[in-house]
Image 1 (tube, helix red, strand yellow):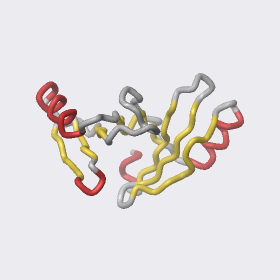
Image 2 (cartoon, one colour):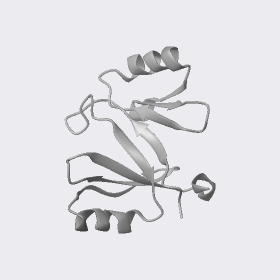
Image 3 (cartoon, one colour):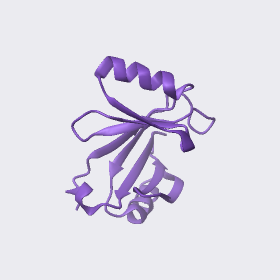
Image 4 (cartoon, one colour):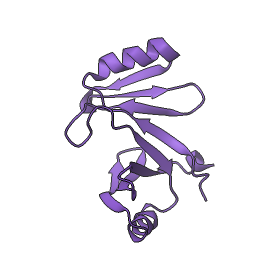
Length: 123
């Protein structure tokens, strides 16, 4: 079973390059821009990271999305719905990385669950 760690934090930005520069200068995080997705990944040096995507109606500025490690996305989506939550995104592949799903809890908070393609990631 996974450790249930937070594995990724995503913060939408009107300008991903500006957001990256801010956090790089503030915390010294390493940044990697992925032009094909207009997405900037950050790493804090401890193995933890996240990214900034372009803000949209679905992902407005100020709506931070936390990804939690999951052994079974399908089972957890089903359980979230049984507990009164709402599935917002079905299991979706992130090419070369893993899979994620998104649900809303009973208080309207949005959480993502993630399973890595790399089994060592969950150890």
